[in-house]
Image (tube, each protein chain N blue to C red):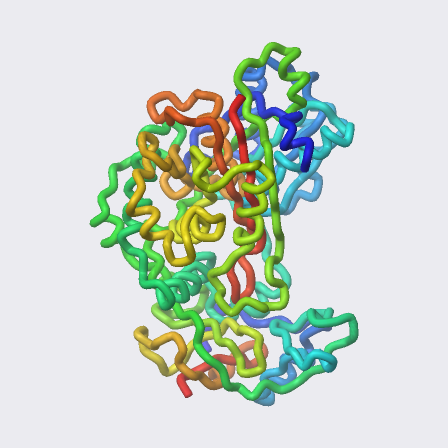
Length: 129
Length: 392
């Protein structure tokens, strides 16, 4: 990973999430009553007033939006692709899209991938399935 | 807000400073300039003001005592203050908050003031999911959100390049007729210029985006009764206002281009007793051109996917049949940071007061002004606000 990139700083809400990421697991927060999941991690359950439970994502999803970033974030080298992925479990994730060209089509099935290790917690990404 | 529909509240004066790129000034200096100007136009002194509603300034974002500092520095003594953090929706949000405060008896005459010197200094700090779940993944700013949104829109309806090019060109014509538009943007533009401008986050081009600058704007809001007693002849009544923050909180709508305007647009028009075809002037918040097209669809001027045809089939200039952002909008006049929502608002009020000079719209009986606030995670924007103004 390139120097100068922002890296995630775990909070009390996300410490388990990032520990799982370091093991190659993407955690979602699941509401036991409705079976629905939320992402990003929050201190509350969006689907009820009981506490949500961590649940590992299958890592499968569909690309529903994509852009080629040409004015990069600090430490990134443009151009690069970022997208919104609708996970099989329901919630949407903003992540880099790896191993894909700029003409990747929306509706493309994607799977979880991981950025090369660097400073800070390991970061999830997606690639064409 | 029934008291709005009954026209009990009036905007009696408005003012804005020239928009300047990297002015080297402070938000306070700009606020002082615009306060002097708006008081002069209203024929008021500082002692006539008992309420102050402000927007957060990116250039002053670290200061947790903003209205107190402004009141002390600019010599206002107040029975009600408010600082609103709805980003670009703050300016119209403050009209409604001022109206509610006046109606509740907390104050009688409010200055709604927004000032930001963001292109000189930005000391804002994003917290929460942004540094943890967006920045490490390559988020480099709002063009990324709008690039994603635009890709989803284009996938469904096709990329509306022709309509966006027309918006860019026509708004630029408005800016050329607006003495307060930023000089850095005051060059004529062709559709080819728009189409050739470089990509920032595909399909968002440079000329789809606002340019940040420094500036301030203000309006004075009071009761219609007081305005009449003072002999004010031309005023603009806020007759309806609707706001939603965090539309679709549980991601029940898969289409990320659907915004809170699908709720607040129809509700505000209904409150005002108006149909979309009754609207004389549309002053939509325009941080990106595609936001105008989406609002046309969501508020109900055009059917879903019909925004492009709507733009192409109307004359949208200040001499046209459906004038949009007649002063250039923020896209062509400049975005003075979080005072940006005031650019669209001031243009709407100026037109209704008949003070727009060479760009004056002939039929300006009412205006719809909107505000967009804050970007959301994997969706669109946080606040969608709609204000309906009627001339009197």
